[in-house]
Amino acid sequence: MYDRGVNVIFAAAGGVGVGAINEAKARVTGGKNVWIVGVDVDQYPEGMLPSGKSIILTSAMKYLDRASYDMIKHELAGTFPGGEVLHLDATNDGIGIPVTNPNLSADVVAKVQELYGKLKSGEVKVADSQIAGLFK
Image (cartoon, rainbow, N blue to C red; front, side, top):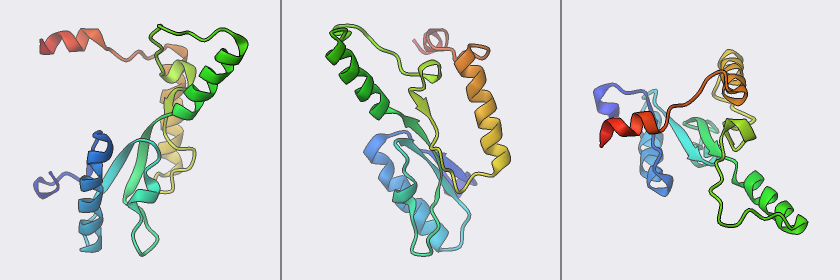
């Protein structure tokens, strides 16, 4: 993808994304300007180069720490939602980007926060089953 002119890759592939991170690191070390968007956790440290720069632009995070905390809280209160499907999204702060994004400008962070607020309030909705139906 980088060879075709792509500048940023979102390798949403869990641990498999390590290969994309390593490729981006090699290319930046060779003088190219490429980036990775991390996934699941803040992958900024995984993208660190000896220069102290990270090739991780930001990360699309699942806040599993919050989910774990909530489940422990429910268990202690006797309200554990066993057998239920729980959705973690913007409405319950289950997803987001890292609090600190050294490679994003303040303007970009402000735009992300604005859109996140619209997702959280329901003003903007993410399609799910409507799109899935297109690929059956």
